[in-house]
Amino acid sequence: MVATTAALQADAEVAPRRGPGWWLNGAAELSRRNLRHILRSPELVMYGLMQPVMFVLLFTFVFGGAMDVPGGSYKQFLVPGVFVQMVLFGSVAGTTIGVATDMSSGIMDRLRSMPISRSAVLVGRTASEVLRNVVSLAVMVVVGLLIGFRFKDGLLPALGGLALLLFFGYALSWLGAFVGMSASSPEAAQSSGLIWMFPFSFVSSAFVPTGSMPGWLQVYADHSPMTTMVNSLRGLFNGDPVAGDVVTTLAWSVGIIVVFATLAVRKYRSQSR
Image (cartoon, rainbow, N blue to C red; front, side, top):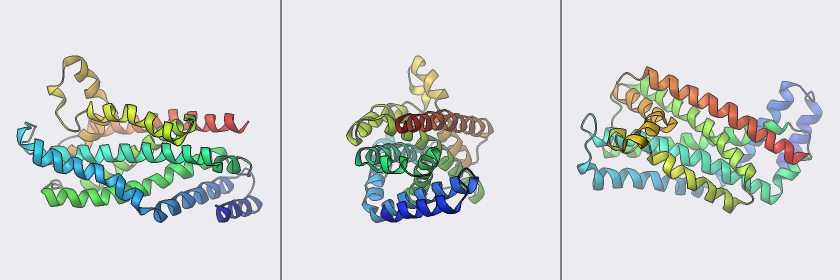
């Protein structure tokens, strides 16, 4: 943190105080600081991967034989849903707890006293979560291939689906930043995230077709951003038409960024005052 502080102060002296270079230097330095924390604690990434790996194995080999899904292969149905759930939990929980920890440890107070943009502090945090998701997705792709999952429509649609998923995860990390700024402690931040993330992920098409749900619940599940993201991945991975789901997912992602980035930065500025 001392090195980060020195670098930020040096950047502020060299770059124009209100220019884009000043803002970018601050965001980049905070991203590097957060990435160094991740690299120094690889067990955090490992623990974050244990849950999706267990979900894939348990649902495939324990429940898979009893599942009746479109296309007939539960592996092709399940793996995209687990990808989205993993990015959801990683982006929101990682950002929420990270921001809340920085708040409680005094790091945010030190950053407030420095000549750095308030929004750059949070952009640095959310951008660093993208790399964590890249590593997690790489591992999960290998796990999926080992159990028999295949990208049936080729490499480019698969890469397009993963890029869309990373953008969706980046949007969710802004939601996590706002929750972390609002929580009173890291423990409270972790608990508040789990309260809504489990129903948000399960009330969707991630693990079962939404047609099996009660009618009132199906209305929500069919229009959930979780469902549109999962359906987009299934279509891109399996070669099905998904233009509508992709556009809807992009709209959800942009909307989440606009709303929660605004709220998170405003929350940070109000605490600074």
